[in-house]
Structure formats: structure tokens, C-alpha cells
Length: 289
Image (cartoon, rainbow, N blue to C red; front, side):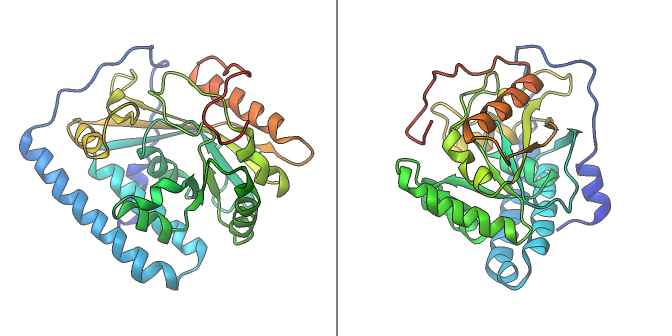
């Protein structure tokens, strides 16, 4: 856990000159000794998370759990020498009935968003089977969705409604998979059904990873054939990285369809990332429209 001064430092807002060009340059790898220290501190930080999930989380309120998660996530970014850069219309920390929707580049996205706006995430059910990480996600309140079952929508609606009723913010990645951060996939509109059903406020968020020069940094991208351990190793090898999160103006889900809500969110995030709006005829996976 970190103190307030550390949290402010880890959330330092950085305004970079201009937007990153569509190219990638990586930092010179860190020294082997530094990488070793990062690995040790990372394992210790994960051990602390497991302890919190098992001992502390069951005994505290959802709001307290959110504050703890925010501090832990901010500390994780600091351990990896990742500077969090926050921009845009960030919701108030006491915002209620809020659903954060984001593009998806990396497993790091969850912690970047949590460091800025702690949320309970909707995630694919396969994550539950991951060693340690699956258990940790379950204990922290993750809502697991079976993407191949359309009938699962009702259960997700209920769980998201219950989570929102406690004052928690819910987060989801409506693309359904990750990209390199250079494009946006069509959002599955079925994932927006709970937002419509609960007349929630939807906060579109754009996440991207940059070098210190403001160019796109592919080291964090978790897609293709890269394994989880290889992804962590790739991130740890970076001397530094900027995780930029930009909040678009919120969208009121009351009175509009889930398709309209998905399209509005797509357009907002695509504009921030400066990428084309996905073709409306695209279909990815079996998780809905």
C-alpha cells in the first residue's frame, strides 16, 4: 500500500506535445539488475494483493475496497516505472451508476483504469481458470461472462445492477479482445444491455501506451501469440513508459438502444485515438452484435 503522496505522483498528469504518430519505437532495455529488482518487487506486490483479497476485502465496504484497489494499482504502475497520464472529463470519485467502457490493448488496462477510476470489471469466464490471477479477480468482485452463451445476458444484467446499487463503478472492454492499440474493433452491443437496463451513465475511455517521446509503445500490447509471462517480461524490460488514459464526456444510457450506445461509445473513443470508426458490418466472436 502507498501513501497519498505516492498516489498523487503515480497519477501525475502529463501533457505531451502533440499526438503520437502511427509508429512504434521502444526504449532501450533496462539493466538486468534493475529487471531483477522489479521482478522481486512485483512478486511481493502480488503477494500483498492475495492477502488483501483473502483477509481484508471480505471485511470492508465496496467503497473502501475501491480505494484500496486504486492505491494498489497505482503502486503497481510505479513498480513498473509507468507514469499515469490522465486527461479529459474524468468522473467525480463519488459518481454513481457509472459504467466505464474502454478500448483494450493489454492486461495492464485494468490497472491503468483502476488507478484512475477504480472499477469492478466484466471479464471473460476463461480468466477465472488462470493460476492466482483468476482467484484474485474473483475475490475482487470481477463479473465473469460466458461469451458463447447469449442467455448469460440476464445474469450479467442482475450482477451489474447489484454492483451499481452498492456504489461501485463497473468497467468493461466491449471489443471482446485486445489489439495493438492502432485500431478499434466493433463494440459488442450486447455488452451494453445492462447499461440500458439500468439507465446507467456510460463513460467512454481511451487507453494507450507511449514512449517518453510521445510515440506509441508496443511493449504493453497483449495480443497475438505472446504469452502472459512473456508480456510481463517485455514490460519489465522497458526503462519507462507512459500509460495515457483519456475520459470522453459521459453518455446517458436512458432512452437509447444498446446499439446506439455502443456506436456513440465507439465514436468517442475512436476520435480520441484518431483511428477509424469500426465498420458496422464487422463481427468479432460470438458475444453478440
